[in-house]
Length: 191
Image (cartoon, rainbow, N blue to C red; front, side):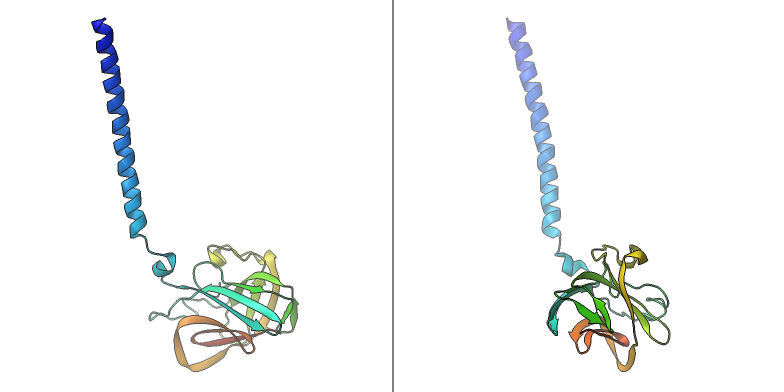
């Protein structure tokens, strides 16, 4: 009988120590996770190119635009950071997107209501290509861009201004959408 009690006590002790040890490890993991969670900053504060969202109206259509706003930071933008003759996500990080509540015309061409990613193809001179693509939720912007998903391609002529703008901005203003960065002003006519 003594052997049985000793055996039961030994099994109980070993089981208790095993589960207590597992619990301690689990507790440590939870604490570490909690510490990491409390040290995390909101995504908008971590981003070198802050995420911007704006809403406005062009005629009867309500527009919503979301984009990452990079800064120049002493870099050469056009032709270097943003190469000429290549698709650019027209912002930073994920693809910029535009949501139209009604059908519109963009540079005189029809575009159905909906949400589209906005890409451009910058040129060293002359008109730029402006692209509205059906794949709007692209986490890595132009790296996931597929031309076969283009819904509309139009041309828009950029204006070059004297005053330089440090951070990219996309605004809903006359004549529709205006992209500004460095000394560029790209008006995209929407009706």
